[in-house]
Structures are given as C-alpha cells and as structure tokens.
Image (cartoon, rainbow, N blue to C red; front, top):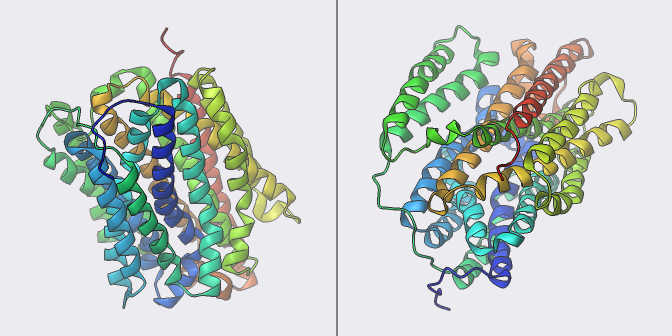
Length: 480
C-alpha cells in the first residue's frame, strides 16, 4: 500500500496512527522497565561490578536522552514516517544482537545503538499523533498514548522478571524481536508520508556534541561518585565536563539560528513550567519501580518475577487514571490537573519513604505505588497536551523532542542518583551485592546501612515531587 500524500486529519486515520505508535511505544518503553528488575540477573551473568552494573541501565538512558533531542530536530527537517520506520527496525535488529553479547562491553555498546533506535521511535510518536488527530479528539489520543507508554514502561518489570527467571537473561531482549517485526510492517502499511513543514535549516552539530559531554559528564560523576569516591579522577573529570560544557552549550544554543534546544521557548512561563515539571515528574516516578524491585530481591530475596509483580500497583494506577486524564484534559486547565497529579504522586512517595522499616504487610506499600502511578498519569496527559497544542506545527518535533529529552533526563538522573544513594553508605565489599538480587548474602549487621540508602533515595524523589507541584502551579492560567 503506497503512502497517501495528504495532510487531512480524521478520527479514523488518527486511531490507525495510534495503533502504529502504540506498538512502537510498547516495544521501546518495555525495554526500560524490564531491566529495572532483571538487572541483577544480567549483572550476575556478566560478573558485573557495581560500576558496570550501573551502566547496563545508564548507557541506554544516557544515549536515548541525547538522541531524542537530535532526532526530534531531524524529523522536523526530513520527515517522520521514514525516520520512524528506520528507528523501529534498528531497535529490533539490535535487540536480537544483544542476546549474543560475549561480554559486558559489547552489551554496553549495543545498548547505546538500541537507544538510538528507541529515541527515533519515541521522538516521532507524539508529533505523528498530533498531525493525525483532529484537535477535538487529540487529548483522547494523547491520553491513550500516555497510557500505552506508562503501562509498557511499568509492566516491563513483570515481563523482564518472567523472561529472566524462566528463560535466562538473553530473552529479556529477544522477546522484542517478533513485536518489532510486526510493528515495522504495520507502520509501512499505515503511515502516510506527509510533507515536511520546517525549512531546510542547518543541523546543530556543535549543540549535540556539547550536550552529550555535559550530560554524560554529569551522569558519569553522579553514578560513580558513590562507588569510586568523589575525589576519584574519573568523577572529578565528569563534574568538570558538566560545569564547563553546560554554560557553553547554553551560550551556543542562544546564539544559534537553528538550535538543537530552542531556549527561547523558556521565555514563555507556561512553556517553561511545563518543561521543568516534566523533568521533575519523571525524576520522581522513575526510580520508584527500580528501588522497590531491588529492595524486594536484595532484602526479601524474591525472584525477579515476584519483584516485578510487587511493583504492579504503579501500572494499575496508570491504567485506571490515564483514560480519565485524557477526558479531563480537554475540559480543565493543565495547571490544575498537572499540579494535582504531582501532589497525588508525592503523597504516594511519602507513604513509601519509610516502607523499609514501617510495613509488616504489603498493603501500604501497594497503596503508595498505586498513588504514584495514578498521580503521574493525571500529570502527563494535560501537561503534554498543553505543550503540543500551543506550538507551531512546523516545530512540533523539536518541541516534543525537548519534552521527551527532559523526561528522559529526569529518568536517567533519577536512576543514577538513586543507585548512588543506595550504595554510598555501604562498605566497598558490599556495594556489588546490591546488584546480585536474591543471591546476595548481606550480613544482618550491615542491613541498616542498606535500608538507610533506600530511604535516602526515596526522600530525594519526594523533594523532587514537591518542587514539581510548585513549578506546575506557577505556570499561570491558560491564555484565552
């Protein structure tokens, strides 16, 4: 079936596009959640140290964050259909290759390539939906997209735990392949090749390089500071790269005629608040699943599959609230809904913060996670809709790329900081045991240190959520 060269929006085509993007979103974001509980199984297979185990997660997150902004710009310049298909194909092929990795270093390189494919898919998803749906039903389409994305990322722990426990570490990646093949074929049949709307502006290579070293240096320092020590040359070098490259990046982007990150968008208070709240929401939500998955395996000695089941309330909260949030977003201002969503998530994290010592049963732990998931879903749909509906259509890819990048930056920063806080108080001899899951043998006298680390990580998530509520509230009412 040849793509139809038309820009006509319709309900029917919108739902077809949503079926395509849902497959891609499900595939790429399942990948994030699967390793949140399967990490100990993968790390054990490769005899990973605390440092290399961190980077099994962080390598994908870091490169995905950078590539999302890059490909948001590329899509505006060169078209979304072809790029989306290429990204999904790349992700599928690399998922197959990862399962044959002979060592940890090959795995990390392939994870970076997989991140590039995932970034192409994710950065094109929201613009494709926005271009396809009539405005009256866009919020519903975006609501289902948020539901799919959130459910995929948060069902991932169950899927990852199942495959890791029953079939081995490689199947944590191999299960992507058949879904990816179906997704590529369906995208080729369904998506229309719409003409690009942006002018042929130059590509911001300098911005890409500076952002990579700034963010990479920060994540390197944050993730390794707790294990190597803050005076280690690698950690100092990472912090130096961040401190030097960040202001240089901002200066270059402000002066650029076609910037990678359009900083002038932040001159609009409503935009700026929506973007910063996106970062803080992702920071607060992401590590909840990771922390509880590690806690269940390390402290309670559960299997990866049981740990995946334990974090299901976050998914349930997402599934229940996302459709409601889509309907409410078309009737109420994003300022109210998004702030309320962040407040609900904050309440959930507040309940979870003392979970390591307070709960003798799972009930309160489950309630806390349910609130985190539901609150995040209530935040995401109206916040995304407020960004996409008020931006020039020619720059929707760039605007969504910035939104996605900040969301991913929140995820990677949250992951790095949380893993650092969990391990920083442990003796060197115990730091690698955090990643060994139910096979870890931690002496009872050392457990208070580990529990304190989990609590500190949760407190950092709670602080981020409170800041998110404040930022969301100050965005101001919607312009009439």
